Length: 123
Image (tube, rainbow, N blue to C red; front, side, top):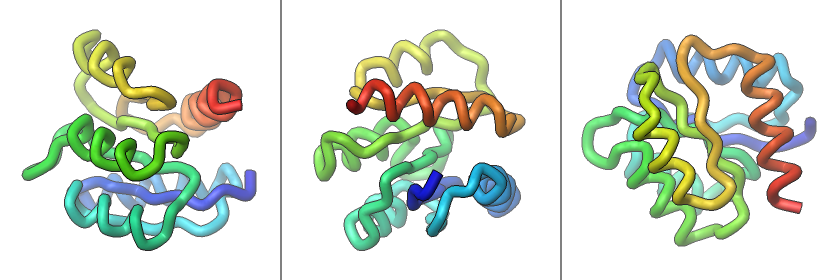
């Protein structure tokens, strides 16, 4: 796909899992951050095209992190990743433009489809 990505998750295991999935999907450069504040800083420094954000993190949660990143870049593609299967999260994520939503465990096909939808919506 040739994109660069930032993976924000407080779980090292999930960061590695998402990194492996993105590498499988041929995402180029992949940066990691272990919380929302670190993620926002990494985003400002590296300006990746795609950001995956864990919904539940200490400090800034996924939606708050996404809102801060959206203030910096109105067009970056973001995907909220969560183990909670709740319509409320989907509704909250729907209020932020160009923000996808997927549930754990990470399914490479779902990630690929979500990225494709975000790319189509951004054009």
